[in-house]
Image (cartoon, rainbow, N blue to C red; front, top):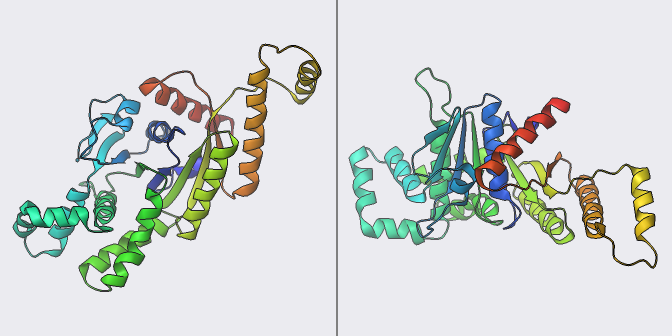
Amino acid sequence: MKSLLPLRAVLVTGKGGVGKTTVAASLARFAAQCGKRVLVAEIADEDATTSALADALGVAKITDEPWEIAPNLRVVALAPALGHQRFLRDVLPMKVLADAAMRAGAIRRFLAAAPTFPEMGVLYRLLDLVRTKRRDGAVEHEMIIVDLPATGHALALAQIPASLLRVIPSGPIAAAVREGLELLQDPVRTGAVVVTLPETLPVSEALELVQGIEQHSIPLAQVFLNRVPFDPFSDEERVFVRSLLDGERPPMLGARTLERIDRARVALERLSQAVSVPVGVLQDVWLEGPRLAEEMASLMAVEEVHQ
C-alpha cells in the first residue's frame, strides 16, 4: 500500500463482485489516516438510485462537489456534465457563455450521447480536480482515488485520446485530451489498481484486465487479492491435515475451508508470477458497509507497520 501514497490519481478497477468499491473506500481511509488529503470519487450515474461507494463509506449520498466526511477525506461524484461545463468555461471567452451552452438542451443531449464525450467529461472533471489548488498554492487533493464502475471503464478512459484526436487533431479539445492522456500515462502521478478474488476464473479475468491496461499505457500500480481466507497452518501442519483428509474417509468438517485456502495460495502464486507490481493480500473480514472499509483500512495500516 505504501507504494500508492505518492500517486495523485489511483484508478481502482476489476470485475463486478470482487469488492472493488470496498477496496477503494478502504484505500481512501488508509491514505487519509497516513496524513494525505484524499478525495475518493465514483462515476456519476443519473439513473442510479443507490451508490455502492456511499454505502461503503457510510454516507447518505455523494454529490457533484467534494465534501468532507472525515479528517483528510472528501468524497465526490465525477459527473460528465460538470466536466463538460468546466471545459467550456476554460475554452470560451466568458463564463456566462459556457453556462448558457450547458443550459441548452440540445447541447447537453449531444455531449451525453456522442461517442467518447461522456468519458471525456469524466476525464476533464478529474483533471479539474487534480488541478485544484489551496490558497497557499498547494494542491487541494494530494490523492484522488477513483472507483471505476466496470472493468472496461479504465480502458474506455484510455481509448478517449486516440478516438478524439483522429477527429479533432488540434484546438482546445485536442489540448484537453492530450493533457488527460499525459495524466493517465504518467507513472509518477497515476496508477491503476486491479482487484480480484482468490479463485481461478477471477484471477484469469484480472490478468486479462492487466494486459489491457498495459496495452493502453496506463501504469499498473498494484493488484489486490481480496477476501483471502485466514490460513492458520504451517507447511508441516498443512501436510498433516491433508493426510487426515485424504483417503477413503467420510466428509470432515473444515475440508472445504482447507480447499479454499489451497485455492487462495495457488491464486496468490499465479498473480505474483504474472505481474511485476506488488500483490496486496486482503484478508476475508466478516463485516459489511462502513465497518468493513474501516477494518480493512486498519489492516492495511498494520501491514505497513510490519513491512
